[in-house]
Structures are given as structure tokens and as C-alpha cells.
Amino acid sequence: MPKARLHAMVHGRVQGVGFRYWVVEQAQRLDLTGWVRNRPGREVEVLAEGERVDLEQLLERLKDGPLMARVTDVDADWSEYRGDFDRFGVTW
Picture (cartoon, rainbow, N blue to C red):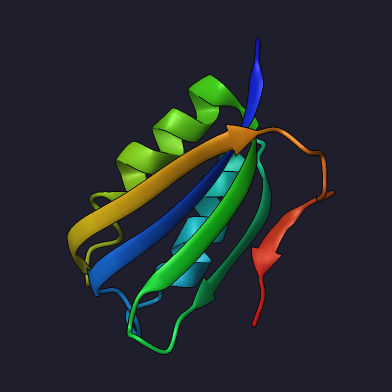
């Protein structure tokens, strides 16, 4: 299976609703590495690495988010896998 890197910016009501910790849970279930963080513009930023098929699943889940969130858009960019991370967590 080919590996890749996904960089996503999630827009909408995604801060103050447990979104980051929900992303960590989703990424860990998919055996991905990387991080998630809040951005000053009220977006949530995600950088994840792993199997391309698993990253595609994460991207689809980001479009919905947890129950209290209201995602309006997700900007996603793909790049080559670099192996920079050993786990997935929240960063600042």
C-alpha cells in the first residue's frame, strides 16, 4: 500500500466543540501519525501521514466532524510521505 501525507484545513464551527480530540481518536483508529491544532482564523489544521487509503478515510470523516461541529469546508493537499512522526496528537 502506498503511503502519503495529507495536510487539511477544516473550516466552520470546529473550535470549542472537541474537534481536535475527535481527530486524534479517528487518526489513531486508522493507524496514522501526525498532529492537529487550532488556527487563529477559527480553523482546525491537520497534518497526517500513513497509508493513502486510511488518509482518504480520515479526510471523509473530517468533512463531517463530531456531533457538535458544523464543517463548512475542508481544503486538502496531498504530498509524499516523509515519516516525520511516531504518533498522532494535539499540538500548538
